[in-house]
Image (cartoon, rainbow, N blue to C red; front, side, top):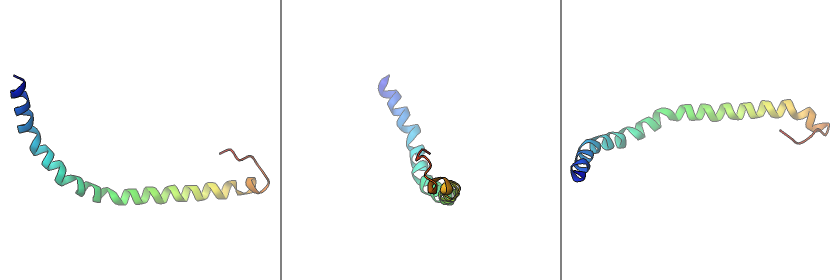
Length: 65
């Protein structure tokens, strides 16, 4: 019974594994621009935060963020 289960699992899953193997690089390429936008937004927000906290740092405010 256990061998039959494993045989069914292999027969069902190998096509799915091949599809994932082919589609993963395509999905990675499609999602790459969103990663770039996310990194850019993170850098812009960090710059805005640094600009807003600059007067406090110059006047000797606490170092907590």
